[in-house]
Length: 195
Image 1 (cartoon, rainbow, N blue to C red):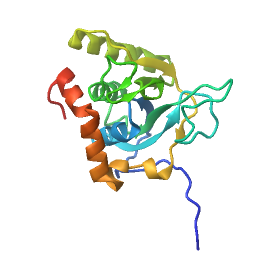
Image 2: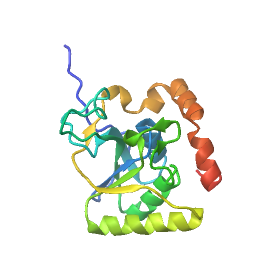
Image 3: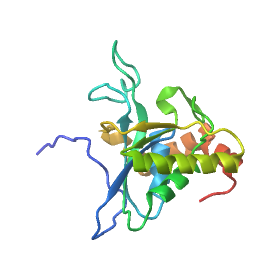
Image 4: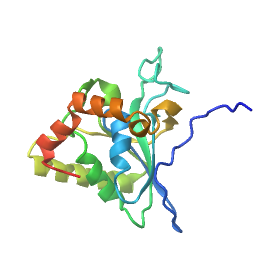
């Protein structure tokens, strides 16, 4: 019997909890890389690649950043589900900022343009306050201007199934892309050796 695949959040780590979960939506260049990095953080339950921030309904990889008249493009982003009893929102953001180039709002690494710029999508004023604290601390540590957009969270559209867990499904292609794009090299230049 054939089944129809639908874009659903992908759970890539198993973690049983008795507490509520929380979500964060972060953009930092290629969503394959953001997803892969965030899944390494203790307390993260799942990460789903997708599109958000724009007004294109039912976006796809082919059209998410090519709006028609009157539409706004999306950015590649990742919706992270985490256990707030094990991982505070602030710690999640500090980890995220150290895995991107927060000084570059014109894209990230080899991926250029607004669809790849760093963005933190906030759900409320409390989150926005924490974001501002984390970005101010990053600016102080780097001794240069941090240029990460902070926007209210809007509808998150999961990307196509072939984008989910790309780093596991296509490890050779993923590693080559990541190395060739210079992501880790630039992060190390900015932040030093990080895990």
